[in-house]
Length: 156
Image (cartoon, rainbow, N blue to C red; front, side):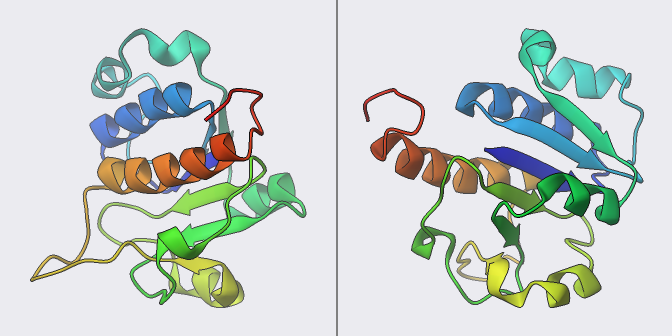
């Protein structure tokens, strides 16, 4: 499983996601431009001592990311999607893609892959969850399904 943050802006969010990736056995992909340096102390602090266990790749842009994805399934987390994240059959090959904290995924990118959009249902006046919380919600649903299918060789 791969988790992608497109133009993340807040170091602690990316650090929390890095720690989450290690916990669910996912690689982390960051797409530039980043709102911080990889050496940022707040980023490192949020990831604690998990960095040595993290598979991290930084992509120059969305085209470089798509070249890495190849034919693997994309799941684009966006408030513009209509399909709930729970209505997807996840696999260990999925790329879970999340946008920046303030702008989400670029509209043009989402428009290229309308069938790949997923949404976390929201109630009340909330527009969205914190980025690291949204990643956790979707990643653990994907992990639940993947483990149930025994993709990692670990019984559910």
